[in-house]
Amino acid sequence: MSILQAREYLKAGQLEKAMQIAQAIADNEGKDLFLADIAYEYAKAGQSDRALQIVEKIHNDRKNEVLSVVVKNYVDGGDFEWAKQIAEIIKDPDDDEDDWKWEAVSDIAYGYAKAGQFDKALEFAENLENEYHKDEALWAIAYRYAELGQFEWIIKMAPASISAGNDPLAVIAELMVAQELEWDRIIEITKTLENEFDQRALLRSIIYQYANTENNSDKIIKFARSATDESIKYVALEHLAKSYVEAKDYDRVLEIAKSIGLEKVRVTSWKYIIPPS
Image (cartoon, rainbow, N blue to C red):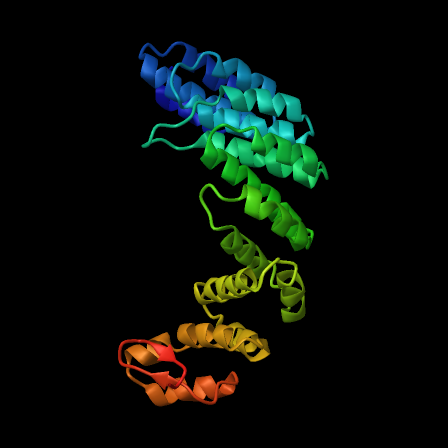
């Protein structure tokens, strides 16, 4: 039988027939690629044991994607110990390779958190040697806290934990915007930060997150109108008025300024919006 016939079997979900042909492929690289495709389909179907049997026959890094799916299967089944053992097998990527271990550790951390086992989730994340993987695992935990609306817990863990690849306050802001929190709730969360500098930094990050998402001008305006700190209003105005400043339509910028409670501003041709001197 030909490799084309084997592909047809694979496409039709007749994986054992495809496997029989794969075993006869003489080219080792070609065999590994095809075996990885078969193992992947088994893993996606939830047949992790069969997928792992096939993975043992694969000699290149294509097996890492299969293993990441198997990890997720074990996590979904609540078997975190097996998930962690399989994740250990996944090779750390070279610079030009897909990072399947990142996906695996994120799934494990999020799985623990979703099961309410936050202590184990944090312990797992903190024990990861790869700082990038650690950061992503902590992000997954923070995301679960956000889903539950428990942003105060994110603030407690963020300064000490979410730091390898992200600004902790930017992480919190992104999660808050994703959950579409109301202004009162945002202020309540912001006030749990220990100092006013961090509070303002978080509010600025929230505006930045809104500004980098399409069609959020109304939200930024509402946010700015509710803000009591004029420095936050100015940050909002800068994002709202960017296109008008570039077009030198300063009158429109002044209209926006008044609408959010800034009666006096000065606009320069160099895209700066500043209080009058």
